[in-house]
Length: 335
Image 1 (tube, rainbow, N blue to C red):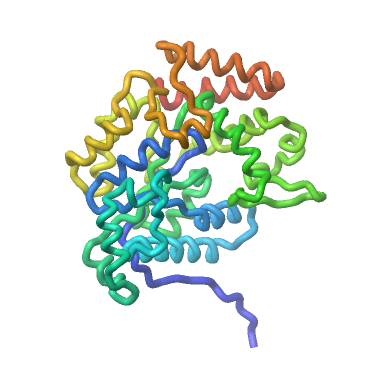
Image 2 (cartoon, one colour; image 1 turned 45 degrees about the vertical axis):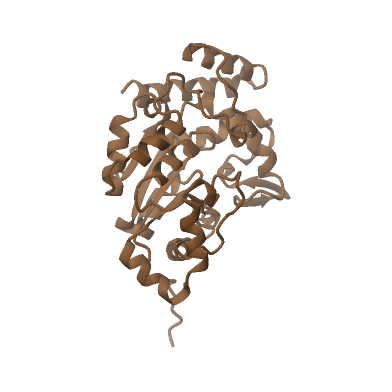
């Protein structure tokens, strides 16, 4: 008898569509995600660590495509199933995923209503859009589209490297602690985060600021490549100042019209705004390194950030940072 390998599959799916708002830490996802949630039929934003972990394992060649794709499909079904009947609803008021930020009465009614076997029929009738805010999935876009096909709507928020380094530097303390939910692996008893693959010695011998730069370098090489045209790339700098073209694209992709609720949420997020850094003063932003703008000049803001970093990193890291900044500006802001 031939010993054939079993292929892991999931042919049946209750998911209608899923909209992913993805990006590198500090890019502005939590500015865009509440705006996305304000469109009709779009569910409250949720995080998806299991989907992220499938993608990270795939990047490390630690899982086969059929397993990863099936688990991605299964997790999307599980998340839309849970949110549709209020299971695992987040009632913590300060969290970005809290029901108190998104029509709380709707979610309370769901928690008190019948669920289980009735839910797939409700999903089929109402066609809700599962809404996920994800981290660093751009390099795994092919895997996600293979898993979800036409059900996936993918928005990638991008931003100048100098605006993301402070948050990413703070993240390295988390990456190496028990709160970390990103995939780690070990070589010679040294543990690394998934994006260190192939550059373990460089990461091992670098400080946290340099590690932040090298992780951004890894990510931006995918952004600078010829990526899948199904990905909707949204430069933060353009969107927050001139959102009209992008908000119309979002409306079209979601097949949901612009409404008073959308414009209200844009106002809450200070979009459009004069200064890039003029964000709402949320505690989560402050914890991630956000500070009110010090200058009325974007150029001076960038120069101040570069000067601060130059005192904490090697010449090699600074050279890489300067190159990333120039390439980002050329490709996405001066196109």
